[in-house]
Amino acid sequence: MSNREQTYDVVGIGFGPSNLSLAIALEEFGAHGMENEISSLFLERQPSFGWHRNMLLPSATMQISFLKDLVTFRNPTSGFSFIAYLHASGRLPQFVNNQDFFPTRQEFHQYLEWAQAQVAGRIEYGAEVTSIRLPSGTAPQEGADRLVLEVAEGAGRTGRAVEARNVVISTGLVPSMPAGAERDERVWHSSEFLDKYRRTDHRELRRVAVVGAGQSAAEIARFLYDELPHAQVSAIIPSYGYAVADDTPFANRIFDPSAVDDYYFGTEQTRESFWRYHRNTNYSVVDDEVIRDLYRRSYDDEVRGVTRLQLLNLTRVTGVKRAGAETRVSLQVGPDAELRELDFDLLVCATGYDGMEPTGLLGELDRYCLRDEAGRYRVERDYRIVTTPELRCGIYLQGGTEHTHGLTSSLLSNLAVRSGEIADSIIARRAGYGAEREVLAKIGGDIA
Image (cartoon, rainbow, N blue to C red):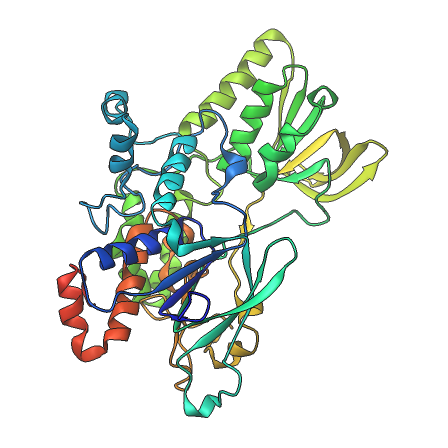
């Protein structure tokens, strides 16, 4: 049977760090010499691997320790760790001498590329999954143990079907723009920043603005200030200023693997407390070092009697329109929400992302996926959507589970453990409950 005719044990949709970590977990399972190796395929619509390529700004660092890589928290002896990458690259002594837990974003991206090259046989790039359905002629009441993925490939978008017993959806987040703002050649989202910046005549950029109060907004404002010495940079911030991220040791325990259990099995009051007290570990916050860098630039401007860096605090964008060659931005400014219009040569919206929403991809299958009272997918502890009994195959989510699993659902912090739990679940389900403890014991897994 050819690869294009077989039914895979698992097909991953999307291939960023989450499904890369899963591919490695499955690779390491096979390396243990287990019988009946798990067959897998990962489909990615991009032509090659890439993770936030357009935010690989010079000197921008990771906000998590290098030990929170693709594998270490699941398997500290893995040959796919960041340490293994440094050793393979001949930079391990130099990295240690640097005495820093936080590599640059560029170096971490190189690590991800190195890791994906080692599992390249499981990946197909330029392959976009357009829908998931039951096999033709399947009567749902009889029970469905396979799914069919419709895949569009290549420039001609030719189609093919792929069968899977389990699917793992990791299509990533969707860029979010301010109300009334549409992307064009001079209105960008941060997710496309570097690509568009490199293709723009920088001499034309004399008045630029960055919208947002989070890490990406602050990093882009700093980058533009340094790269465009002739330009005025306006930072449009809905708060009174940038807020510092709480990365102190006790607060960081919110990202520990055990915190997922506390959230998942906690009461509604417990879950609400997680968000109320600990949003400032990740959402609309900025590293202390970046805040101080920007403040220093602002202060130096004041000493020199110039205003190259302008902070528009308590300000929200309410609309954007073209005015000749310029972009006219409507704003609500200050405590009284004064209405103002300002013209810019460039507006960058570092306004975050909307969560992953797989409903469109699932199509008719959505009727078999159970939801809670708020209309959100019910999700098992192993990240599998709760389905009606007749749908026996697994639909797993890598992302879009903040309501069930907490703050780390779309973050790198719990990546290795989350992917390991999904792999363990798929392996155990295929082995059958009676054999799952034996199977997982051989690979060092665990059953909750």
